[in-house]
Amino acid sequence: MTVPIPDTNKLKIFTWHIHGSYLYYLSLGDYIIYIPADPERSDGYGGRGNTFPFGDNVIEIPAEEVRNVQFDCVLYQTPKNFTTDRYEVLSERQLDLPALYLEHNPPSDHPADTRHPMTDPDVIMVHVTHYNKLMWKSNARISVVIEHGVPDPGIAWSGHLERGIVVINNMHQRGRRLGGDLFDAVRRQVPLDLAGMGTAAYGGLGEVPHTVLPSFISQYRFFFNPIRYTSFGLAVCEAMLTGMPVVALATTEYATVFQNGVNAYVHTNIDYLVECMHRLLQDKDEAGRLGQAARQTALEMFDIGRFTSEWKNIFQVAVNNKKTHEKENSFYQ
Image (cartoon, rainbow, N blue to C red):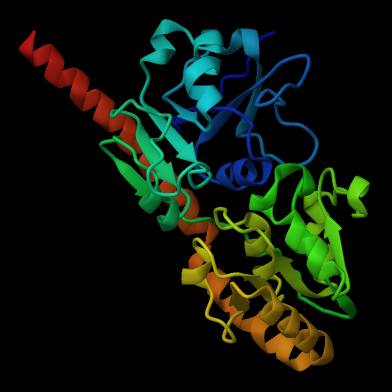
């Protein structure tokens, strides 16, 4: 198979398909993204797939062809990418390319004393929230935060369904951190639906296609995020942009984005949050007020243009740093 080579001077980035929504929003930037695929469509090797409307700048490559394609830099996203995958698909020349590591999550062991598995100080570390950067122990020389960017879906919240909605993939299979137990407890007191991959077995609605998710959730009175410990969820950003009120735990980055009673209801007291949910079900005007404030926050914080510009800039920093380092080494040889 011949891998298409765009006739362009745009930066060419190689990465894996790890987090579909994030990859889609990342792909809206001014660069080319190459992603591998294998026959099994195994973890990280799913290629473009059919879930997201990727543009022509996202190019799928058979995994065995990766070493034959020219890239400008490599973006790692998981410990497996960094410790195993790269040695299986990249050539020696590609292993020496400028590199970045995108960390999607906070540390899962100890919140403050966990050493990051990416140990190369020359690889640029990119975090998605300031909380994550604060908590990880990392020896990366360059460590930055690029907060989420999400396009305005152009969908307006209606809230006519007097129910709340939770959107989390495989929530019950992923333990207390994702809040499956909290969802079950709250669902006994408040009408709640659950959407996402792997949810049908637990009384959920199953996966809702990403392209219709904003219009689907916008019918619900409020969006509930029961996750105890996480990055700022893209599903929460997407809900905010529709003008939908959010109820969430006041943990991790949520405590800095939301002001309780101003642009969301946030607290660590679940009983209080249940009271707030009942209030939103009874008072649609209050729900609309919170939702509009949430939308304004999202428009200010999660601008897609800012997001893709910051990514283009950090890719260029990685490439330039590598060139400078090589030039300095050649000078002293």
